[in-house]
Image (cartoon, rainbow, N blue to C red; front, side):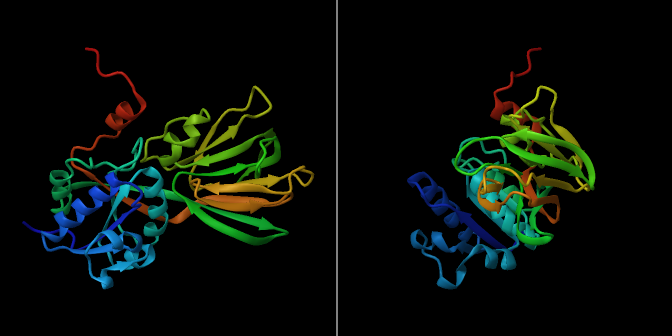
Length: 294
């Protein structure tokens, strides 16, 4: 059988016996078929792999043809932000809760994974957001997000005053607990909990979802992803330490008067799915929608 990939990267968070078991089963399955398997450094203790095949995520991105991530959506997000820079396709084995991004079952992954490794798969591209904090006109910090960038208070929940601009056109000023700027991938995550719409992954749009705005008229806005979003923090905000969170993993410090620029990142994530993958079936099963009645 022909091989669509030669060098595979295995990533995961070895935080439970179940995850450890899945990682070991994957490693044995892949090495038995004579693939070159590179392993994330923190997994090396439980796998009998050569030291030269153990490395950090950046090195995995430079060397691998395909990355297999074991865990939930949270771990997939962390790996995706790095691997997307190296154009490495990614597929996930679900060991989390919902698993919107991790398709393969940990109990019977062999057949589906074998099809993917043979070149029989669906390809899907997901764009990322790039967030940069400007202070006095100078960039202070920056990071990327696959799901969302969230402006929120520090340790104590309270109202934030900010203005929203799209391509330098003023949209509105607001007092709210914060703002979620989400990709279609993130529309089934935090933005959904805040009342945002579900966006199918192929859409080239962003959604702006205010968090508990102090008004009855403010609703989520969907805009083209090639537009630039600017959030300007009011200079007289009482909290000196606001934050922008990228996928809930990376936190950027924000001060009153800062400008937050959010735009589509120049790179994108390539997700691989088994041939029988259906996005609406995923929504139906993960969100508890009713099955077909007639």
